[in-house]
Amino acid sequence: MSFFATRNVARNRCSCCRQEGHNRTTCPHDAATATSLREAYNRTVRSAIRATREELSERRIARPLIQTRVEISDTEAEFRANVAHQVRNMQERLAALQIQGPPPPIAPGPTVREVKIQEILFDHCQEIPEGLYKELMDALVIRG
Image (cartoon, rainbow, N blue to C red; front, side, top):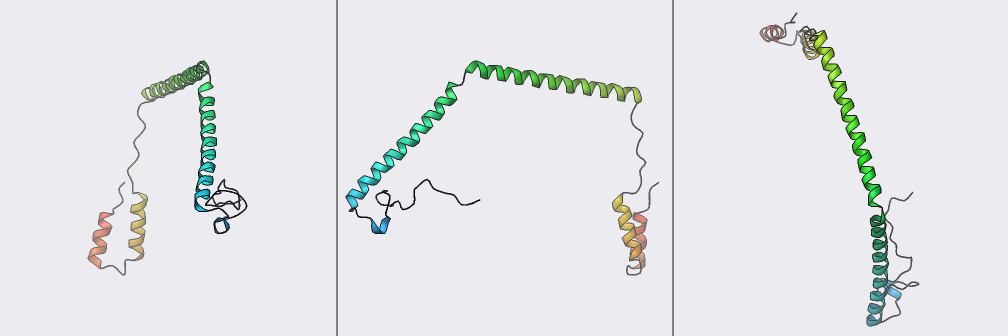
């Protein structure tokens, strides 16, 4: 598989006159002839591109509008049904929460970060000055 962009230009096409079979250095035409040949070639390429674009736009326009409206209304009906389902689901969850009451509060305890900091401080307690170690450990007292 090639990752390089390819051109629609045939191999050995002269960049001066756009004729096949030779290149710019071996072009047999003088400057005026090469220019007229190049312009003729460019006109044919542009007309082919224009024809392709017109054909594509005609295909897009030729699609029946009624079918498009039906597709939109089907999509809208599916969307409305999906939203109604979500609303019913939320109402059921709200009713269940109102019957059960609020969930019990989570007991405040040390976070994972606090525990990790305490472990690091404890592992390196000999390297830390005494006063600083005590202040840090006091700040990280486990809540319970």
